[in-house]
Image (tube, rainbow, N blue to C red; front, side, top):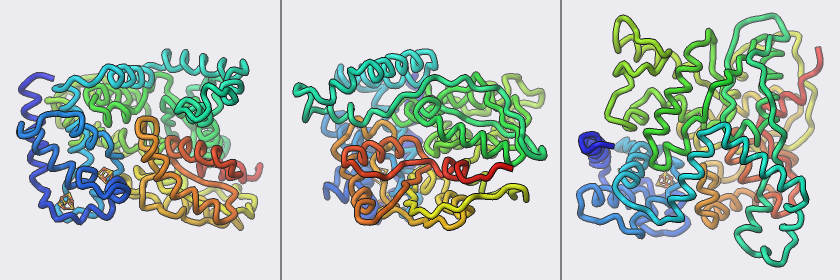
Length: 449
Ligand code: SF4
Ligand code: SF4
C-alpha cells in the first residue's frame, strides 16, 4: 500500500473511531470482555488502542496486537452502540494497517501466508485436501489419535476435530429445474465448503431445482475473501470479491445463493464502504468490477451494475423462505428436536437469523428451539478457532452445555465454520447430536413427486 493510500485509510479509520464516545454500552455484549473482564479485550478498549496506534502514541507491541488479534469480529458491539460506530470496518482496517506497517513473528507470517494462499488457489486447496484424505484413509489418522506422543497436545485436539474429507466433486455448470421452470439462480460454492460441506451444497441444488429454478454453478468462481478481509489482506480480499462479481455478473439470474452466511455477507458487502477501504480506489473507478467491460456511460453505470449484483446475493434460507413453493411439493414430518444456532454473520450483518426458522417450520412436527446463548458468538469466527482455541472452545462449550441438558437430535447452523467448530466440540464430548445445515433437513424431508 503506498503512503497516500495508507494516510487516506488512516484518516477514514480515525474518523470512525472518533465516533466512539467511550460510553461502555458495548461491554455487556462483547464475548471476549465478558470472559476476561479486561478493558483491552473490549470494543471500547480496542478502539482506544487503535486510536493510540494510529496517532503514534503507542507502538505496535505484541501486547497491543494480542488485544486486537483476540477480537472475534462478531460485531455484537455494533448492535448496541448508540453512536453507530462501524466496528467491523475499523478492526479490519486496523489489521490491514498492522500488516502493512509491522513485521510479525516468523511463525505467524508462515501460517498466515499458507492459510491465505491455500483458500485463494483451488489447485493448492485441492492438493492439500488430497494429502489430508490420504492421511485419513491410510490409517495414520487413526494411529495418531491413539499415539502416546500426541495425547494431550494441540495436535491431538486438531486431529479429533479434523472432519472427514470427501472425494472431489465435479460440478455441472448448469442444473436444469425439476419442476415448472420459474427462473434461474447461481450457487456460490466457496473454497472450504466445496469439500467440507458438500452435503449442504448438493442439498441446495436438489431443493432449488425441485422448486422450479435452474442452478448455475460457475466453474471460475473463487473464494469469497473473508479470511483475507479479516486478516489484514484487504487488497487480496478485494481482488477475490472483484473476480466473483465478474463471474456472476455475466449470468442472467434472479439470485446468487450462498450457503455459508460468513461468505455471503463478505460477498454482499463487496459493494460497500467496508470493501472500498481495501484500496485507495473506489469500486466505481472503472476497474471493471462488474462485467469485465468498460461501460460506455462511465463509472455511475458501473456502480449500478455492482449494486445490482450485490443485491442478488442471498442466503439459501432467506431465498427458500421468501418464495412460494409449488403445490406439488410436500414434506414428510420430522418428529425430532432441532436446536437452531444463529451465526453472527446471519444475525448481526445480514439481520436475517429468523429465516432458517421460517424455512424449517415448513417441516411438519419438527420441534425447533433456539440454541441457548444465541446472542453470543460460538467462537468459530473464521480462523479464530485455530488461532485462539482456548477462548473459542470456551465460548462454544457454553452453548454445547445446553445441548447436553436437553435431548436434541440435530444442531442446525447456516455457516460452515460454526458447523465444523460445533462438530469438533460434540465429537470430543461423544455427544450424539448431528450438526446439519437447515437446507439438508429440508432436502431429506421433501417427498418425491
Ligand atoms: S457503545 Fe459505541 S460509543 Fe459506546 S464505547 Fe462502545 S463503541 Fe464506543
Ligand atoms: S467484534 Fe465481538 S469480540 Fe470484537 S470487540 Fe466487538 S463484540 Fe467484542
